[in-house]
Length: 202
Ligand code: MLT
Image (cartoon, rainbow, N blue to C red; front, top):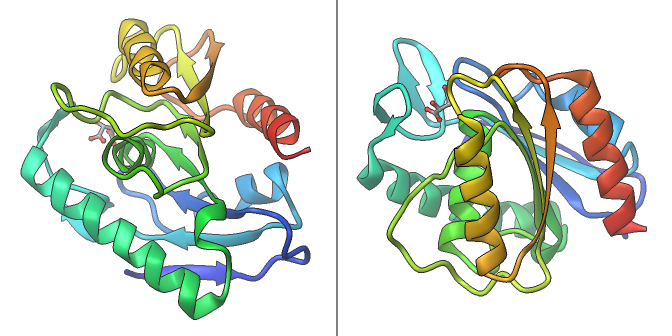
């Protein structure tokens, strides 16, 4: 997968996996990594799917309607890419914290739903419930931060709460942060995510 890897100053820190929104690329979220942990290694990936020229991490049939078969395939592809990248760049495979926005948050949530050891934790900006009707792996020890908008037309508040409870029922620790905004990624929610991150990393 097309990506950028930046080796961090402190090898004890997690590796931040950046996953952009629809139409974005691997450059978009680099400033967020700096705000969350400027000493951490960064792996920023570009989605392999194109929708009218816009990069995404998996296909959709309509806005908010996912192509589930492609989502399963792309989630596996990303998980395998993480395995390969950990070897190639020599970072700890079990120390990856995803930072995703919108479509990128959705594939990060799909990694959590599909693979017990894909991520150590995740910061999800405006995620949806990636899949329904499946059994999640045991996510004990995983920490997840969800930033949601009370007026988000793409992800209604009830869906953010549903995602929180699905993850909690799988034993993840989940913080749900609200902004009185829509689907946009706000500086305030990134600052809140950075505070949360300090709390879990120490
Ligand atoms: C998705 O397709 O992942 C969601 O609708 C969010 C987005 O618009 O990217």
